[in-house]
Image 1 (tube, rainbow, N blue to C red):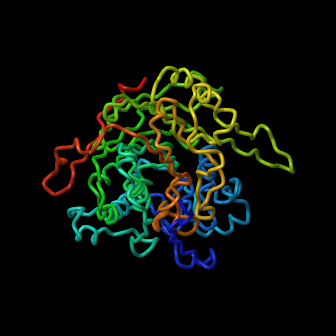
Image 2: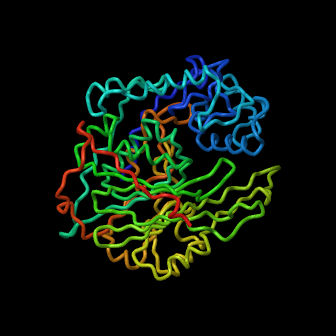
Length: 485
């Protein structure tokens, strides 16, 4: 596993140097949040987490705190109000004040701005990301321009990974994974650094079925699916191993809600590995809080077939407990947010079902008391509490165990004993990291587990369909919300 992040950070000697060289724009594709009147200042009433992270001293946690505080108060009225955000204060405000502005315009993730100057600017930036040439041609890669603000060249180092075995003890195997992509919107998925990290990790680790949590919109997975089937990034184009034929599905209903917005879950799988999604539903929670919102997160359940075997995957995202705020040395219980618990109906769903995997972000290590319902159904965690599953450029080895794969007794019989917490290759020079670049795609590591299967690629007698340009045709899942209940 190792601790090499392959980080390409080039931190300024002093945060003030960043201001002297002009604003570093976000590594995402949307630049609509930059004030039209002063293009060097970031509008904190509309900026995304990724954009806020380009400000001096603003980590992802602080950026998220800004977004949450902004949602609670309905927007900042003046720049000084940002000092009230947890983690900012007067000192940090003075550091970022020359680089931010406040506008009455709210967050605009759907890109419906009516300002013609912003529309023209965004169109020119979007055009620079899109090549009109064949994506696999050298000309297309040379014409793929990158927006200003980040590294001069789109170069990155991928880890030297040994090819995953196609079989163990003479039996074919399949790799299943889970990954919390942390508020992954279409904008974030379009970031070339994030896109490269996700796609190359899937290919390098030979992951055939991926459960994804914390999607900010339902279209985010499409970006990764399209890149895998029709690569445009040079590192994905140059992949020498098998590519597969990828499909994706996102929950038709939100699986969680917060003051930031709705959250969705999804699956991404390689259909050439004999994997088919038969049904996908959101398991509704019967418990609601006083505001009418679901107090518990909803699981996204997928019924898959792999060869002749059936596999049920419950994709869950349980929020970790937050620390209560300290005032005058005392913590206030009113500020304490307890960890979400697994839905009471989850145990009933698991009862009597064979070959079950409960995967995702659980917020706490597996020895916590809240996982008793899983243990009562004879499920066991593949990642022990002693193994950390989070990551950052400052703490490459992580500090806590929050993500896991729980396996039922029947599927445990097919478990090869190989489980991996991926830590290498999760950074890219085009991902913002505080007030520099070279950050991680997510603060959660992908978790990979390997199982025996009866399906072999030798059964694939036909070559994938092509569109005449030597590019495999994109296949998408045709599931509609009618499968939701």
